Amino acid sequence: MANLSEMKTVSDQAAITDIYVLYLDDESHSFDGQTDKLLFPTTEAEVAAVLKHAYENGTPVTIQGARTGITGAAVPMGGITINLEKMDEMLFMEYSTDEGLYSIGGQAGVILETLAKAITTKALDELKGKGTPRQQEALKQFLNESDSYFFPIDPTEMTALLGGIVACNASGARTFKHGAVRNWVRRLRVVLA
Image: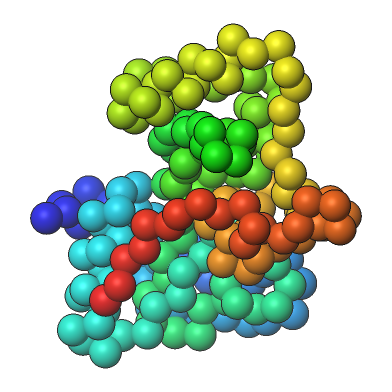
């Protein structure tokens, strides 16, 4: 069970509308959102506990990442807002012998630009010692290869978060050659209320 008292929580309306006002809108700047409470979880357990509480109390929930979209999907209209930007860990690397492809697992708050740069420069120290022995071997193999790699997804906003690009199936110019985000997702961990 998550200790929710340790999670960053903002419920003071003056603070929300002053200091945290950017969390009430998205990149379009076309919306005037409102929220009763703004939460910044760092673990899946915290997200699960908040969603369970919200479900049991009939409280609406808005999940948001970097709010780089322009459709209002991340703009809260009351209830609880869960912002996932603090869930920013890369978790493991895997290799599929069937596809001949590497994949990286990460939390929803991983910044796309950070992930893309880590792949192209092979600066993946964050992954060392993480995951199963098989995943650690995949990372070692990746780092020892002389081949160059890149993240095939390039939405227009590189400050978007991994969870957001998956949720919105974000795309960019490379979509024509490499396909949409959904083509690159190998598995998801989700919380259902």
